[in-house]
Amino acid sequence: MFEHQIQPQISGITPYIPGKPISELQRELKLPRVSKLASNENPLGASLKATAAVQAAIADIALYPDGSAFTLKKNLAKFLEYPESGIAVGNGSNELLELVARVFAGPGDEIIYAQYAFAVYPISAQVVGANGIEVPAKNWGHDLSAMLNAITERTKIIYLANPNNPTGTLFEVEEWEAFISKVPRHVIVVLDEAYYEFVSKAVDVNYANGQDYLKDYHNLLVSRTFSKAYGLASLRAGYLLGHDEIIGYINRIREPFNVNHFAQVAAVAALKDQSFVQRVIDNNQQGMQQIIDGINLLGLEYIPSYGNFLCVAFSDSEITAKVNDGLLRQGVIVRPIANYGLTKHLRVSIGTDKENRHFLDALSSLSKLWKSL
Ligand SMILES: *Cc1c(COP(=O)(O)O)cnc(C)c1O
Image (tube, rainbow, N blue to C red):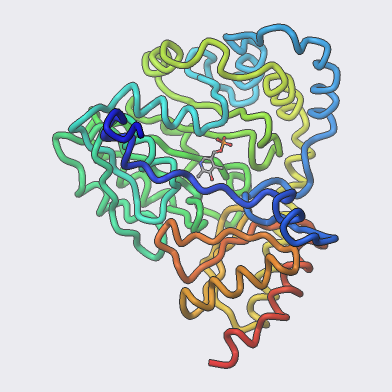
């Protein structure tokens, strides 16, 4: 009915497909036990300090939150040793990624991102009417030199995810430095570090911590989130680090109360409980190994991942769809990623030991689907 009234850049948007909620699957199949390994959520939940802070804050439910997120920004500034004036907080980092597009790009401009990169980047480009330029992936990840070559006079923003979701790939310090040093200063680089906590402390990973480059590159923005390692996905809290001037524009256009009170108090408490984050990282490391071992035994391939998830490969898209269906019937929700053009892969989030076994047992029961070939 309204198709002629819809803005052209909006009508072309394909909706973001979230993981299937547990309640939906339970309703559909009446399953006793469901393991949701579809949305890279935290299998250990959240810090008890964060949940206690939310409980204590419930009395304030009728009040507007602090629109400046004063305490959260102060705590972030202290924790990160980075000036408050260079920090913006958002309703999840997703909001901040979109706000950057609104500040810097409009119709006719170009926004560059990689093939198989996070789905929010093309959506952010479309919403502002910019042309999304997808640069072919290299080994499932970002081809930074090809992305550099894709820059034109119209390029306004480059979105990068390190590690990337859904493929879990990482680019290393040397590659990153060669890239960022050559990007023209009028092009904004958004480095999405949603999985930062899972790699930043790993000794065997040559990881480029985006924050270290903000001083030298004023066209760089770094986004992070409380949704993954901190386990606060439902509350929606993320932050953006960058030059004061850019952060000032983000603050002008964001909604005045974009981060709710419970998200703010939980994030402050969660930041102070780094031992919880360490447990999350340790659990992820063990779970990743557990799933890789199981997948190797089943003769399947996977894309090596630096996140809290792993893409498992099957020989064709039909088998992939059948495996997904077979897993659902046994109460295991993973993420099909055909919407990313990855029709032969399923992405599984690393869970608890029990959830990982549920996944591997269910997968193993389906092995005739690929072994009969
Ligand atoms: C999960 C995720 C985010 C966003 O999470 P929020 O919950 O909006 O903070 C951003 N980027 C990537 C690559 C992600 O996987």
